[in-house]
Length: 524
Image (cartoon, rainbow, N blue to C red; front, top):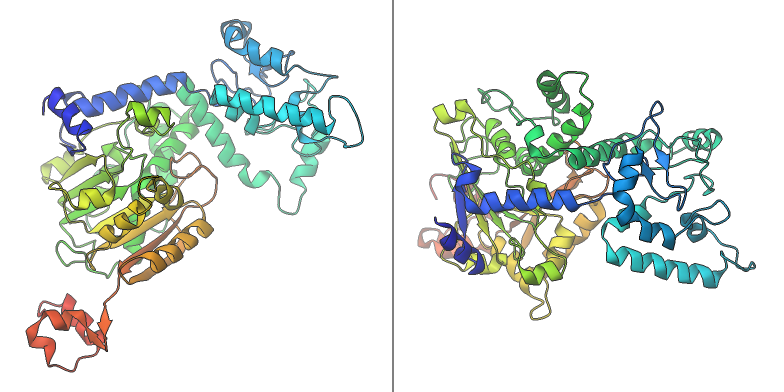
């Protein structure tokens, strides 16, 4: 497809197709995604409490960073970084100066209603307005004010000679406060410290390097037989990276986090299929581990286009010859309209985009096809490009459903759900970071759908989630949860609709369970 034709297809809501035996540079759409991902990363600034504001370098006990004396909000690793960043930082520094040895977070956190001065209710209200205005000007500042530059325990000011937590994301004013936090019954911050440290390392890595420095996810050959997975083998990922980079490379943990969280995207679907391993799929009427052809539709505004993670999915199913992935979302491509609405495609989820082939898969003629479609699912369902799926997966269901509601029509979401569950053999997989969000969504769908939906997998933690704190559909350190729905067998006065559609069964007195068996058997 030529570039002009491709651009027309994107603007006219037509599908863009490609396979994993092509090169990224040969597909203009993917080349553009890669370019925009790198550009976005260069301008993205995630604030890390113990990281250099300019280059993202993390401080250590041996090489601590130097705090900005003007605002006490940011750090620098060197005078050179301070000089390069000053023209961007000076406005913020002058707007929120240190007062009486305390930074702006201290006054915003606690104030005494009886006192007057900088921490009075009136002044704190004005301060909050200034903070909000500052955040609106630069999205980076949201991170700056999320990780507050005050003691996690007593909310006091931070002396310069006391280092922050090892995770580079929270602060303590003294070693006593740090010990107090560790001594809490719920372990306080310690429960999240390791994951937050990995987040900081990943952010620092992306501030210093691009995708060329990330090794491919290569796990050898295809498995000889299908074996259920109890957990994502993060240790194996870690060891393989160590072999490529060397055990002393400081980015090993960051790259392990990047790879395992990216693998968790397809493995959420794999986990659900594994839990429902005996249910036959639509295309071939076989369980997923026996299928040779599998089609998955994914509804999410941040698709993972990197083929290496889907290659891993393919490797886990030795009988599978072709995997068809269709990404469907109304905000799939960046336009002037959704840029202004701050809803562009998150290109950074594809910064390490690859279309590399496993030599063993090539020898066995195993391929993955991709389609990228920018429209609501129910519109795609009615289009000429529609391909019937075995599975439809919705990631971050609470937000994805809300994104499908607009001012012109509040039915887009439920029209799409009805289209997704039109065929009784199609599995609807739901993924969300919050179990409560997922449970509420499942209940809403069961009540609102035109079809009778059966919950065949109640919300439960995904054991194949791996490291999930930086995943695009999960911005918390919670375990990702999954659920699965399916269209029920519709019964009219005790008679299945299947029997009404088949004259041979119309006069037979069969119970629904027998009809269900006949429907899935070769005799149907």
